[in-house]
Amino acid sequence: MLARLRSTTSLQPPLLCLADQRTKQLDRRRTATVSGGHAIPLADMPGPRRIPLLGMLNDVVQLGKPAELHLRISKYHETYGDLVRLQIGTQHAVFVRDPDLMRKTFQLEGPHPRHPLPESWTYFNKKHDYQRGLFFMDGKEWLQSRQIFNKPMLKDFHWMEGPIRATCTATVHDMERSCDDAAAFEGLEQFLYQWSVEVVLSVMFGAAFTDCRQSAEFRRLVQQFSATVYDIFRCSSELMNIPPAIADRLNVQPWQQFEKVVPETIRLATEIIEFGIANCQARDGLLDLMVQKLDKPLLMRIFIDFIVAAGDTTAFTTVWALYLLAANPTQQTAVRRDVLEAPGTLEHPAMKGVVRETLRLYPVAPFIGRFIENESSFGEYTLPKDTLVLLSLYSAGRDERFFAEPDTFDPYRWQRSQAGAGRTTPSASLPFAIGARSCIGQKIAQLQMHYLLSMMLTKFELTLAEAEQQQSIKPILKMITVPNAPVRLRFSKRASD
Image (cartoon, rainbow, N blue to C red; front, side):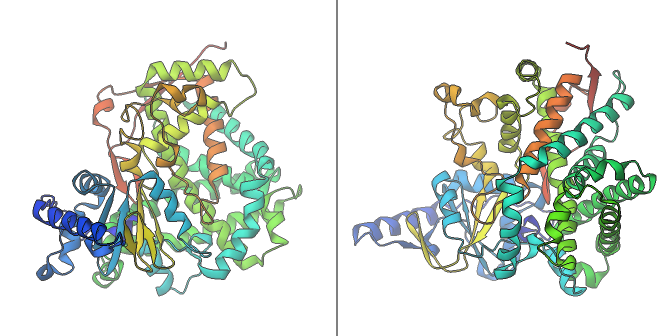
């Protein structure tokens, strides 16, 4: 989605804060209200002025650096309010920070919700006539496939707990064998990438995944796949700075690499799935269940998208969670104590709070977008059909109106017993979205993060390998929210309690 809001330069001009424009808009709003209370047209919504002579260069001026888009939009909200109008190219867009209107967005998405897609991927798919999975589907094709997956992945999902728990246990054992108490854990991002991919595969293959993991060939494929997916993420983020059609025409290096690694990722994912199909004896995984309901080519496309997406989203959220725990030792101790006092319960409310708090401060996607199906009222305004509404999750999650001490990491703010202690507005943080097109993998992501983090806290003491990182680590956008530098952590083995 962020690639859709890209900039074509690294320049960052001053914020276009025009007081006279805001005053005129407010005057028009008062006039409309007094004259009969009619909804105000989108053109009168506050936002930075678009200069006609600049044309598409307005996008450069208004959006600034792609890596700092979340900060730019936060400044716009501070200047113009909870609703900010922007025109991005020819697309009318509205950024919303108000929790009630954020929820209303999903009521206006229609029966076949549409969302903005990464331009590099859509251009690649069109150029090579490649069909993708659920994330890229629309209309009835999307709805039919999505309805089939809803029950096992979002409703009756407890069957996934066993394979996810087993994979997390094996991952922590790997860490115990390899980590050095006195040194930073090297390659943390890549390590968590592979863990996240293996979790998805364990859900796909069920009990057979344990047998597959014993094969050196299978482990080689998974390692190679994880490394290649990481390259896709890196290339995609570099392509945020230039439209893919231009990158292709100019044959720039990031596009060359992108066109090389995407087919390789698809090839490796196909081999992994074929390996699992050939060696599945237990027949208790999602793959076996779905092969009875969907034709194999479509199923392959959907599962390839699942395992490609797993690394980016869950791995980096886990990196952020580990960073926050290491940087806040008091909270780390409290959460560890609560987890240890409830043995066998790897989804303790305190650990759920860690994940929710991490996603509040560092949402994987700082903007979630939906196209409005029909002309609709939205607060005081009327939005035309096909207006793109973008939820400003990063801005809302750090707004003191919605969260007390918003910059403080407090996993306990989400517990009902703490409700009177300060403001907590759950609807201001919707990292998985809601509605028909909410994240299909949210239960897998939540379970695997709850399990792995709980196990890590019982086995290790987490500390920052470099104390200055507590001030220097900042969130930037590279398709998703990532640290501006590698997070270096020490995992010191704890004595058994």
